[in-house]
Amino acid sequence: MKNNEIKQIVQLALNEDAPSGDITSEAIFPKGGKPHKGYFIAKEDLILSGLKAAQLAFELTDKKCQIKWLKKDGDFLKKGTVFGRLNGPIGALLQAERIALNFLQHLSGVATQTNQFVQTIKPYKAKILDTRKTIPGLRLLEKQAVVHGGGCNHRLNLSTDYLIKDNHIAACGSVAQTIQAIQRHKKLLKRKDLTIEVEVKNIQELKEALAEHPDIILLDNMTLSQIRQAVKINNGQTLLEVSGGVNIKTVRGYAATGVDRISIGRLTHSVNAVDISLEIEN
Image 1 (cartoon, rainbow, N blue to C red):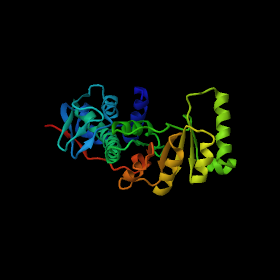
Image 2 (cartoon, rainbow, N blue to C red):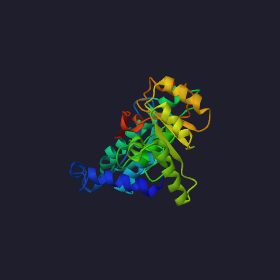
Image 3 (cartoon, one colour):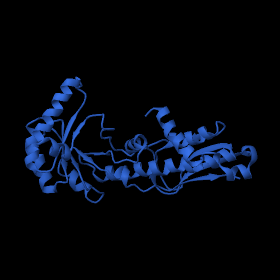
Image 4 (cartoon, rainbow, N blue to C red):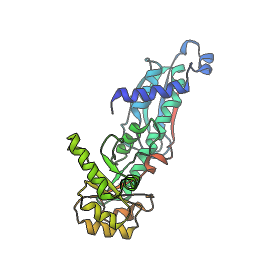
């Protein structure tokens, strides 16, 4: 993820939070106040993510703010770990505090939950993937957090790779017809790098898809019995992905079927923020 992309996201958040400054801090600390020191501390066990966004929250507020990170994105932190120290004008520190914590708490929450899924399915071969069910405007950061948690990214957006959904099939006529239309389009674009994935909801559609040789077949909301049958029929011909209603209690059962990928919307759309605090020193 490019630095200017993160900067745009952070600046939008800062503008939202303090469109004309922080009137409380300005009243108490005229001209920004004296320099102060502070530190970030993990208040629970977590996987860290969001350091660059947090740093930019302070730097874009006041260039005099300086941060030294003691840990890096993707690190596992035990409760009580101090992972960053900062200093700068107290007014700027207080103005940027909430935005920095919002990014750190949410993105570390994404990374932490992703890691829980990754650890749960060991030692099976399946990879844990995210989806496009992200908070608008935060997709790039959330997908980065998934990687920090040990997961993998699905396609970034509608412009990267083909994914044929059930409504595409319903409107086009059949699984075969939709795949064939995609193959013609891919050939027209001369883009061999683009993958073709198709969503199927039963064994009949799976067999129809296999005949057209897509790169990935997504088994949507199938039972474990159906998935095991699909794995047997596929016999390694193409990558098989599972999606639909997967949670931490059921994910290991899906991984045990032998599928290659498990995509989980809740990695980003239903995540709990972790507890991180910024403490200002006297």
